[in-house]
Amino acid sequence: MKADLVLKSKAIFNGRDKKVFSGAVAIRGNQILCAGEAAEELIGADTRVIDCGDKLVMPAFVDAHTHYFSGAISSSDHMCTEISQSQSEEECAEMIRQYALAHPDEKRIRGMGWFPANWQDAPLPTKASLDAAVPDRPVYLLAADAHTCWLNSKALAEAGITPDMKPKSGSVGVDEEGRMTGLLFEPEAYKPAMDKIMDIEPEIMKEINRDFIAGLNACGITSASEMMGDDYDAATYKKYDSIMRLEEDDELTLRLHIFGRMDGYTDFTKALDMQKRYASEKLRFSGVKGFIDGVTSTFTGLLLEPYADKPETCGIGVPLASWEDNKRYVTAANSYGLPVRLHCIADGSVRMALDLFQASIEKNGRHGLRNTVEHIETIHPDDIPRFAQLDVIPSMQPYHLTLDFNEKIRRVGEERCRWEWPHKTILNHGGQLAFGTDYPVVEYNPFPNIYSAVTRCDDDGNPTGVNPQECIGLDDTLIAYTSGAARAYSRDDIGVLEEGKLADVIVVDRNLFAIAPMEIKDAAVEMTIMDGKIVFER
Image 1: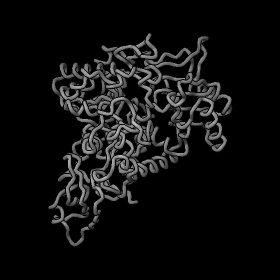
Image 2: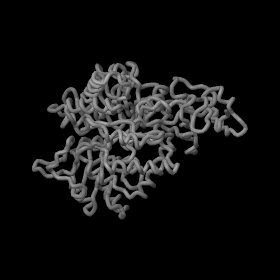
Image 3: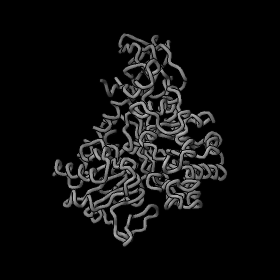
Image 4: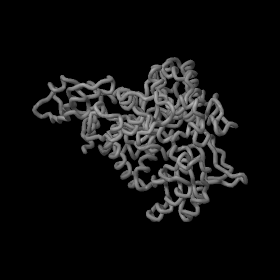
């Protein structure tokens, strides 16, 4: 059997071994026939041969944690993302005013990226500044960490938000007199606002999907996810059916993994129904997502010990559900055969998640499901060996350390920051990392993320954090971004260049193993192959 396509290179990284080798990758149909010297023997008269020289050939990137739909809109002109550069509430509101003036046809003004850490510890914003900036249309602004939504009065009214609302988790912001501030904390509380953000005409959404997927492919990404943990309702089916139609039209060049809602459920029949509907190689329901805590930036991350700069609390309103309720949700989901992914920012939530997964094993036995803890921005060192012991995947986003701007030092103190984003120590204790971006929290381009893991420096080369010893090698970083991330999606058919795997392959414009670490962030993808087809070529 001869190959349809062969990529030759002096630098091939297979996504499993910690070294590069010279040889070729042979592809037939949508599968890899061989990766190595023997691949050249599969060249036939009709085989297309591409000589990549010294450029790195490797598995396509698997982003282990993305929010597909909010990300797709964020990458379009239908959302203002310039506010991520704002240095104050006033500047942010002015940016939104200018965006609204430039987009008179948008019936809602959407934005993403404001972040308290960028505002020099200023007080949290209120609806007053947005009311002044855009008085005539609803304004919905997601924070960069996607755990707080800031609305003007028009948006509060349109979304039906009232000060007496009691979401199952999170809260509606009110002032001392009980009046709404315009802030909604945590996804459960801002779901009515998110429904309005996502309310986009089908034809426009189809265009947004196509453009977003093309952008992902241009960065070498062929696998991503929707990690919002959406409920099993008509609005959710509407979103995923839009992706299904792309697949039916042979236009889907992305493997999208759906994670449904865990919180509040012990009967996961609805999840299994969704799993049956979305079960292809490109669009599949892969498990459920729950939230233990929020974020440390607004003191909703769950710490084991009090906040350094707010010593009266270990976290406001967290955990988002009680230990007993979370135990029922997690053990039930695993009993239905569903992997569970838990949002855990701070050391208290990480410990709780590991305890919950241990309780599931005690109830369900060694089920072999690939449960994950998401983010792990801080952790107690005693809990680090438990990832390997429990076979739980640490799913992390290296560039978030740069995004944090050392805010953790203020929030938890320098001593505990020794254990922020501890990639190296987790590896040393047998944990198998999965890397992603949490897009649209940070850009989906993998190379800054890789650079951050290898150097723990910001874009200008300045050290970030207080624990440079947690740098890891390029080999371990790329494994976490390929086969490691594939494990988080319970997939053994992607992320590795070897016989029988799906042919998702990229060519990088340089050999990352032969350049200075500072150059990694400037690398680019020259070619992306997905399912055996070239879907991007620079």
